[in-house]
Image (cartoon, rainbow, N blue to C red; front, top):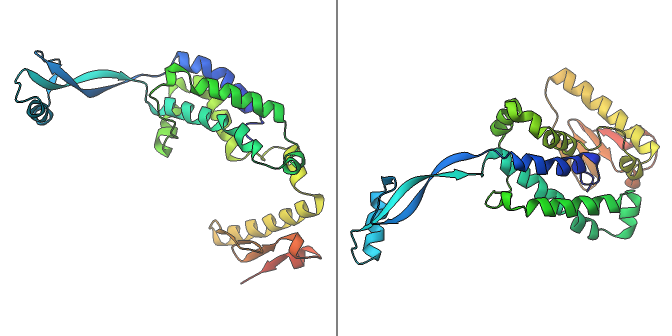
Length: 236
C-alpha cells in the first residue's frame, strides 16, 4: 500500500499505456496441427501420436511453426507490477480503520491507482503475458538495453518499492516516535561498526521480543523501559 500510495505508482501506470504501445515482441516456435500441408519442420514424435489418435490418417502432421510472442521479460515485469498495484485496494480494506488512520494513508489515491492498474492489467495487449518478475540477469539486461528510457517509470517504481522509506515519509513518522527513532539510529551505528570490523553483513533475525542483528539484540520498547542501553543489548 505504501508503494500504491506513491507518485511513482501513478506515473508508472500513466506511462504504461505508452509502454504497451511499443511492447517488445519475441519469436518462438510452436507446435501446430496441420492437415494435407506442411508449414514448418515436422515434429515426428507428435505427428505419430496425432495420427494414432486419428486412426492412422497419414495426411496429418504436427509442425513447428514460427510465432510472435509478447511474453518477454520486460512485458512480464510490466504485467506483474500492474497486477501487484491492482491488489492495493483490497489490501487496504483488510486493515482496521484505526491502522489506516495511523498510517496516514491517502485512501483516494490508492483507490485510483488500484482501479487504473486493474484497467491496465486487463488490457488485451497483455493477454497471454505472464505476471512474473524477471530474474536478476534479466533485470540487468533490461536496464542496459537501449529501450531502458521507455521503462524508466518501471525502474523508478521498482527502486521505490525496494525501500519506500528511503526518503522522508509522513507514513514512517506515523509508525514511530522520536524516542524509537533514536534507538534505531543507535542500533544502526553499532551494527555498522561491527560490519566495518568484520567485513561481513550481519544476519537479521526476528524473535518474539524483538530483533537480533549480529551480536546485538533490540528489544521492543513496549517490553522494556529505560535507556538505549536497556533496549539494545549485547548478546555475545
